[in-house]
Amino acid sequence: MKDLSGKKFGRLIVIRDSGERCNGHIMWMCKCIGSNERPHPEKFKNIKTGSLTSGTTKSCGCLNIENITKHGMAHTTEYKSYESAKRRCNNKYSHNYENYGGRGIKFLFETFNDFYRELGPKPTIKHTVDRIDNDGNYEPGNVKWATTEEQNQKQRNTKLFPDAIRYIRLNMGIDNEILALRYGVSIRTIEQVKNYERWKNIKIEGEKYE
Image (tube, rainbow, N blue to C red; front, top):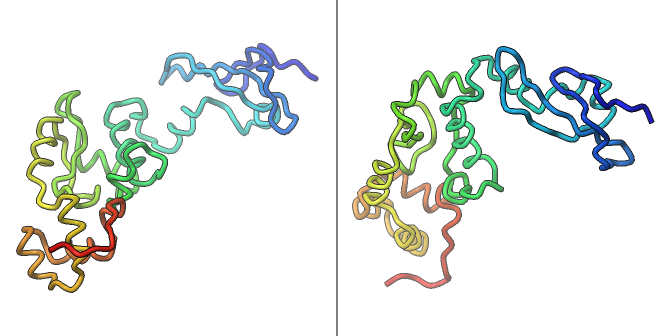
């Protein structure tokens, strides 16, 4: 075994053999030092010998973020909001996926630059990204920065609620226009409820509502 302790690979400095093995390969404990332009707190990661010596892995992941985003804002609160919104729509293992991606909400910004161009900087640290139409997607024209209080107030005013979703799905024969008028939403929204394009997480029993 060649000892790599103390050697530097990209932004990584090898500390020692971690004691872990991956398919028989040594896993080295490495410290990522970031860069002079974008320093960050020391981060440690266990990496295989081959990934280090081949140049496949050169950082804790910060280099990839910088190469992908090209905007120098990878460590900003705006970028964290972008990643969080995308994760709850696309990652089924996210703790609140069922309230977003699970009910058909989509994240439609292709890049962070598009997202930031639409929203601009946060007014304050208390603001987070919010959808103007609570049943709509994260997309141009439907996002804004809002405080928690503003978002809570909007949720209290939401026209469709779980019992309404169940009622619509249990009574498929009722005309969409009638349901739209009843709940104050668009006919398209009613169609999406019936087709399980939204609120996929809301389950129904096999009985009709009276």
